Image (cartoon, rainbow, N blue to C red; front, side):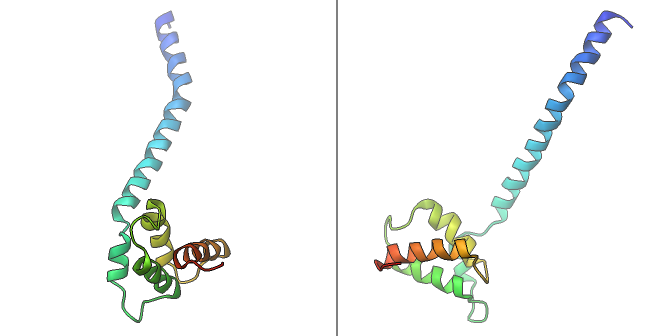
Length: 111
């Protein structure tokens, strides 16, 4: 084995863990991108709701969106948070607290 072959082998051995980490990160980014492409927006979720599938969180989200005008909600709340709440049958304690705070802000009542 010559020095060049040894140097090449050492470089590959040192680079392997880094390349593996990059490949793992790339796969995670692809999964997130694929999820975002298939995730429906809030208008689609609420439009496709029937009385049979109208859950308590979904009804509360609908009421909030009907009341909001302009910049009452942040972009994150409108496009990420409320759709995730509308897709649930039961909210966790933390989600319930967050939704109650949004309702209090929108309807101007004490939480």
